[in-house]
Image (cartoon, rainbow, N blue to C red):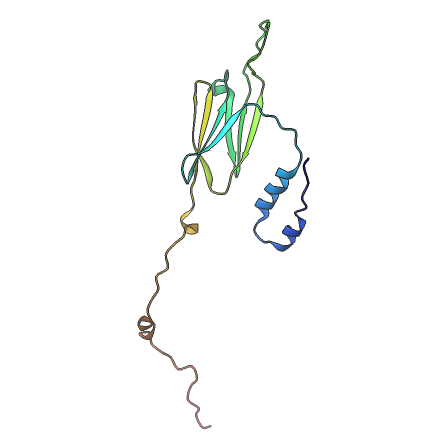
Length: 158
């Protein structure tokens, strides 16, 4: 049993959390779930991740990996039709498209296809302007060295 949550009160009282709330809202929707091709998501260290998809039977030319803003899309389309007469067909060769929502500043750094396993390496790269930085604290003596100015001028008799 799945319950649907109403996120509208959060939209009214929060600023700058739109993407997170939209992701929560999308995750709470009931969708038909296609679990092919099977995949793993691994966190290799604090800033890097790896997505591995089992794509047996696909060549690198039949696979496409695209990143548009915060969405990673992996798709596969077999090049030609196989007109062979199968007595049993257990190896899936159907077209697919798998989407992964990425956090801000996560970029694809490489992809590799070996023995039917497609691995996509991801890295979170924070820009310098949003990285934490240390602020130097000056002492009161440094402030006293600045020239003081008189705010109000002397009153002159008219």
